[in-house]
Image (tube, rainbow, N blue to C red):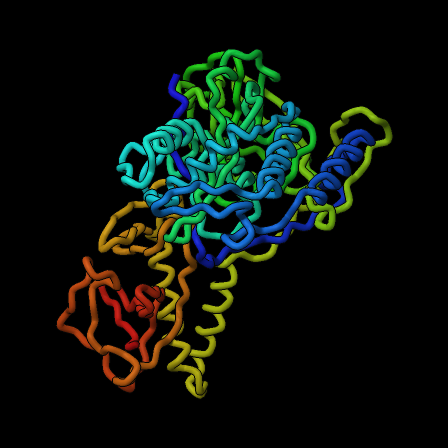
Length: 508
């Protein structure tokens, strides 16, 4: 059986703009919760509040610091880090009615050796590192350490991270599997929620490239022969479930069957039992041949355009395979809207629902339309002192919107290019964004730039990136203003997008 998980999770220190909507729930549009369910919600909220939230960095991660050059020493992480990570693993396993797992010194030591070896060689985050297939052992790392690192990395969840997260945040990333470079196979999650998993090893180390290499060993051959603790593991789980674990980009839902093999691609529908809204699942895949988590069936999908509302109940129907319901709540108690309680202690569905619609705040497009209307009114006023500037802003917004229309919003299908030691990500026609790993699309900010010879290079270029850049025969004119639809900073230089293959740059 192949235990290798061919994907690694990444985070980068980058600020990305996100649109959030505030959903108001009328009392008529909410499921009723039984007394047992309310007690379970409070138990989970209290347990989550007690989980350690300390963030770790290179200054507080280690009990003994590793030495990543000759003489090589893997060091060790603090018990606080290991215990925190294990607490989160078992908290999440508990949400799915799975037994807790343990860790031990030998497995932790081996995970630490693996993390420190990868940190020492500055293992390329953009290449599969399970088994270190493309890496070469330096002379100062012994054959023994290298063999351990190869074997453990091949049987572990790996997380390469340049943010100083908490130990638990790493596990949350692996559970939601948002940053899985292989797409939506949810392999990291399957190992975390394996119905046969009994133990783990935990290690972490910072490399000179500022990455924290995190290792969580999950695939033990002996576990593969154990009886499953549960026949099916669904994400989200049946019963009550935290809405936070479904919020964010690229969080696939999944169904794992421990002993039953299912072939083909089933039809999946998700229904809000409180509003009657029905959504057809998208990007449905069957990864059962991967055997992640020692599961016989691995089905993943996205729930479509269904609105997820705390306090609502949903039904998932995986045609001819599995069907169940769950109710959403907030694991952060302070964010929890009041839950309606039923008169008895049985799981009841709500009666007839009000036809009142859920109201939400306006999204970017709505706000942009308001701004556009305001600008159009100003442009129509010949006496307005902002007429020229408003016209440029309107042009800038049109530029920005033209980029958004061509934009690829699914990070799984980003194009990739590697040039001059950096990665570039294709967001659409003639659009490239530079960073280590982009897990969400950066916002396009429209505006007006005023040109002067001291602050700007007046040449117009085809791209802000060296290997894509050519100087055109055109120029901008000092003293004039120009509309731009996007700005990008690379190599400490800010570039402005004036149109297709038209970029100008600020002088240092």
